[in-house]
Image (cartoon, rainbow, N blue to C red):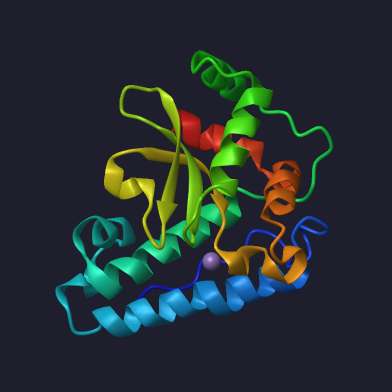
Length: 193
Ligand code: MN
């Protein structure tokens, strides 16, 4: 049985960038819904005693979709924190970004454009490849870098339920504002893990 991991901040913690109602619905309805559905789907299968990441890497169809969405949502909300003024990355993260021949401003520009242009319900990710290089990739539906042998460092959620209540069709504004609530310490921790 999987349980919904606790939310590391209050529903209103991301205001005014992401409104409390969106955070509450996203957590207590969507994220919880994937947990409930996965438990139901795996109850009588060999997946019921497996780790979440193992299920993601071996299952397909609805079991994959729900397992991957649990992981994606936990990762997503861990990437965020209350708004920070002048939210600059820490030194080692900046170094890794620069090694990719990006300035921090250029990196934000490329990732923002990628998220704005992500056509599907999906996510845009900063990932670390096995050779240590960084890359920005788009995924659709429940897919994530875990199945591509890439380590996720940061994600931008562009499923409409992540922003539609406050921003409606204004995805550019949502993706741009979002830089102020990136939890750079979490991204750094993932980079070094
Ligand atoms: Mn979602």
